[in-house]
Length: 127
Figure 1 (cartoon, rainbow, N blue to C red):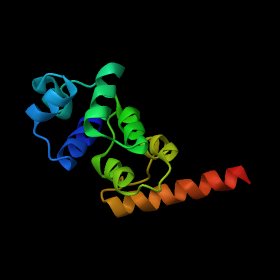
Figure 2: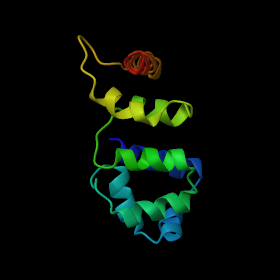
Figure 3: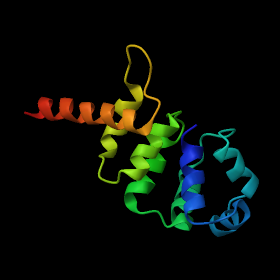
């Protein structure tokens, strides 16, 4: 779950019910519910644009929402990118695709450490 998870978080941040949100963006609330539950995963660009406008998402959050369309990303990882506004969104995809020896990160702090290591590796490549 990822696009639906982020959509629900952003909707709840604005204190909107499914019905209120559906009316604001002119999208059926049942469809929004299915998106939030990951029963549907590929909304059109037009629908995403209406979500962004109705939620009044700043550019970074709008970009994050668009990056999550059709992907299943760990919720803790999504939370890190929602909460840490200074983290470059360019690190989301590599963090999501990382392979791990042993267990995958399970907490936000573990994900932050892995993302920080990724950022260091990318910085070394740039030098």
